[in-house]
Each structure stands twice: as C-alpha cells, then as structure tokens.
Length: 88
Image (tube, rainbow, N blue to C red; front, side, top):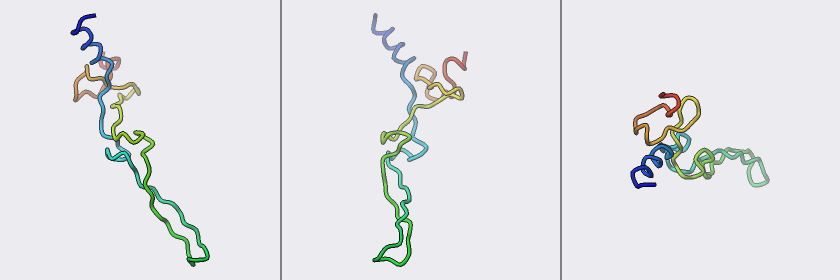
C-alpha cells in the first residue's frame, strides 16, 4: 500500500494514551503492609511499601476507553471521548 493509506490505517488502530488514574503516571504505587507484633515490638503497625502499578504495568499510561469499553483511537482526535463505533 501507499504511505498515505498506511498512515490512515495507523491512525485508526493506534489508541490514545492517557495518564494512569491509579498511579498518576508514576508507574509505582504505595500500599500498606501490616507488620505483626513480635519479640522486638510490643504492638503491630502498618508499614508502607512501593510496587509496580498493576493497572498500567508500570508504564504510567493506559488506553483511553469509550463507554462501551473499546479504545478511542488517534483517528477520532485527541479530545474524543467515543470510539469510532459509538460516534457513528
């Protein structure tokens, strides 16, 4: 195919990526870990640890999704909120 048709196909297949709502684009989240009472402590407490965000797999960005669950593509425009199927 030609270059123009390849660019059109890329635009219709490439999803718009937005900042991950779980980790705010950092790729890591902090979570609480309970530390139980032990011989060195008389009471337990909550400690914090950080780990890779499960929602974005550490990338910090996720696909922008339509209400129906399909991704919104670059072809629809950067401000689009609906996929091609719902917009038609």
